[in-house]
Every structure is written in C-alpha cells, then in structure tokens.
Length: 275
Image (cartoon, rainbow, N blue to C red; front, top):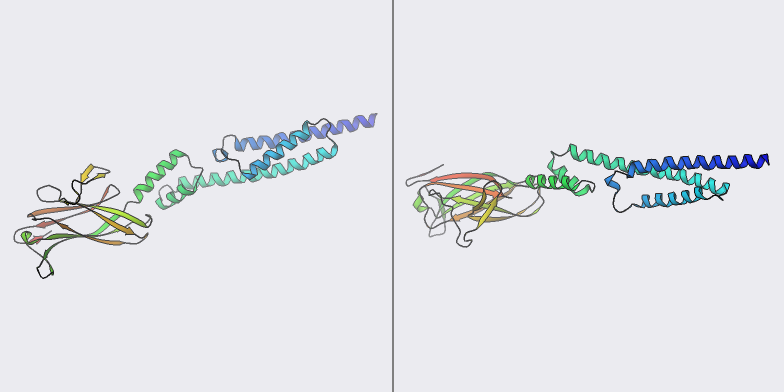
C-alpha cells in the first residue's frame, strides 16, 4: 500500500513538473507572438507544427489516465516545443534586425527602394513614406544644357546664326541620368518662354499643360520621350520651331517627374548672338 502511494505521488510530481515546463514554454511563445505584427496573418509551417504539439501535450497532461509512457512522450514533445520556440525567436530576431537596418539606411535611396520591396513587415505608413522618398529620388538630373540657334539653308545645310530674324529653330540638347531609376521609357518636358513672356507652343499639342510639383499646372512646348538604360547618361536633342523668333532672351526649362531639372537662356539680338 505504501509503495502504491509513493508511486502515485511520484506520478503526480512528474505530471506537475511537466505541466510547469509546458506552462513556461507557452509563456515564452506568448511573449513572442502576442504583440509581434511580423507573426500575424497566415501562419507559417513552423507555427502550425507548434500548435499541433501544444494540442497533443495538453491532451496528455489533462488525461487522468495517462501512463508513464504517455508522460515520457509529453516530456519529449515539450523539449521539441522549446526547440521550435527557439527557432521562432531566431526568426523574430532576424525580422527585427531587418527593420532596424531599414531605419538606419533611410538616407540611401537605392537601399530604401530595395528594402521597401522586400520587407513585408514594414507598416503601411512607413511604406508610403519610403515610396514617396524613392519617387523623388528617381527624378532625373539634366546637365550639359546647350541651346543652339540654327539657320536652315535652301541647300539643306545648317548654320549657327547671329541674327534673330534668320533663326529657323533652336536646337535644345542636354544629358539626363539617374543612378537608381530603372531602365525603361521616361518623358522629359521642355518649356520655352519667348522674350515677350509667352510659352512657345506646338500647334500639334494645343494647350498642353504639365502639373509641376512646385508651381502647379504650366504649359509646355514639347514632350521628349527617352528610352533610359539604368546607370547610363543619355544625350537628348530636340528642335524648337516657331514662325518668327524675337530679339531678347529665350528661357529653356526642362522638367521630369514634375520637377524642374535644368534650365538655360539663349539671348538673340538683331546684330549678334550671345548668352
């Protein structure tokens, strides 16, 4: 009788010990998943395995008729559960590290863009802020802006002229580039303002306007498409024509993505050309 009582007490002690081990594992799991947005939504394969283990362990520990073999099996499953929780902790640590790296690299636009696309744990607000930053950073820059007044001879030859009344076209040329913009089509907008303050218009475009970031809607003279290759510098050239060119300053402004990316001035006069 005394032996049976001792065995029963040992049995209950073992069950209680396993229950404590299980409760501790479950607390660890709750601390990971309770407030962690990274683990919300569809459950991973690991989480499904953990849930299955928990259900079986609870079943054994709540079974008053569980045998010593059952308890031994529960002990082994609790050990497996702790290993699975450790793997989950490592995954959470990895995701947390990625978020910290994202915050540290906010000033690097190319890194922001890559992290934005890859980091599924970033909040909606953070994604929107990063998308806006990348959008601005993807704007091209213009350099080497040249404005050449040209007289077209009847023979077909072209000559730079020094007289406003002989100008048949202004050839606007410039280079564009951007270190993070993806390869593909892009549009550059050219606004030519004559000395009288009016924007030179293309009859084919009518009253075409561009919505700028700083100055609202503005009329433009021409839209110049470009097929861009990432990481390269692209040279563009476009002729601006009108029936009569005036004496004075012709202001050329170049826009991309709603931003002014460059400008230049060419001054024409009756007896010469400078500027």
